[in-house]
Amino acid sequence: MNFRRYIFAALLAIASVEGIAQTVATSDVLVRATNGDVIAQNNLGHKYLVGDGVPVSCSEAAQWFAKAASKDLPEALFNLGNLQLQGRGVRKDVRKAEKLFRQAADRGFAPAQNELGNMLSNGSLGKIDLVAAVQLYQTAASAGFAPALNNLGVMYATGRGVNADLPKAASLYKQAADKGSAAAMNNLGNLLAAGRGVPQDLPGAVALFRASAEKGYAVAQVNLALAFAKGIGTERDATAALKWMIIAKASGEPLPAGLESEIFSQMEIATQKAGESEAQSWLARHHATATSGF
Image (tube, rainbow, N blue to C red; front, side, top):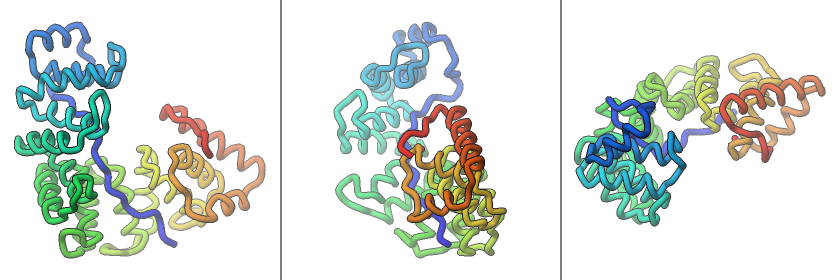
């Protein structure tokens, strides 16, 4: 049985600057930002982006990130690059995003190095350069950046830009998983489930799928539902299978053919109600909603 395989984890997060707590009063951050404090300018941009003490405004966020980016703050260069890449608060411009990421990457900012690696590996710049992508991932990974460790693992697992090396991929996934990467947990679980590059360990794979799923990683949620439905590496549990299937579907993650019908064929009404209730409780805790049957 094949579990859902790895995917690249594109980093589209926003970086705040260490040393300035995000709970600092907005009025204080505004005063500092207005007076030219570059760190406060970046953090005020973050506040506008998420609505922390101010109304959500991507355009205001972009303006404050731009002020800090003009002073070469790597976090702000990266944040403004993300907005340019996504077209949030500014016109979408992949080339401007690339330039900003490169400026941040040249200053040693690992998230920007990783994002450039993603752009070069997925062709969003109009070309694919896997060797350059691997080099960027390696640089960011050497700084211990978990998404880059995971993405470098994907390159070794698939032989893209490097010679395929599954034991090396497993080692990189393990390092990233230990740092909390949900994608890496799922990817390492895949290798353990198949015994590729590591000795097969089905219970270990399920444990990793569960840890990743609890972090909200939809691919792992599908894999966990599959494991419970078929009793792979764990006891067959229709309630748990239904729970994780509903959670995965709420994120729009496609299901393997036949999984839904197999799960429903195993259960009585009471079991179905229990699974639905557990799924809704999980989704409520994670501020999600089961609609188009995450």
